[in-house]
Length: 179
Image (cartoon, rainbow, N blue to C red):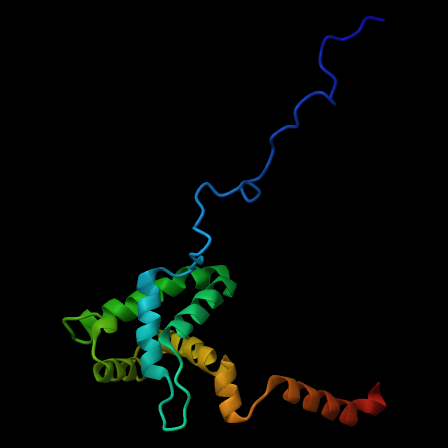
């Protein structure tokens, strides 16, 4: 039999059928610059809102506003896809709504702290359910960032490890006969 002139499969280069996800990114961020789900404008709005909703008191711990922005920035990619896409739009509505709903000549993040508090209060008590729900969601994320901080937990006397041990012991006591 004659030998085929076609190269054997072992000598052929592998086919390039990689998917888009498997291909390396064409542009990469520098190693010292973290990746952000939110842009700088969105993070500025989150910092401005965090300053409004952060609990204030003589003994209440105060967190740096950048920690709120970092927490929300890391949380947004975990949201369902549609919410993650629309979250910056909601922040933009909060920011630029000041021109129409305020009425104000400056955006939300440029207002004084007292004026921002009044503006947010207007959103909390708005007739439009969309405005109320939007501000509740953004405030909720900011407060989740606040109460997730170990310094706040320590100030409240809440330690996760002790709480988990206590709950586990209590569940075993209550449900031991069912096991």
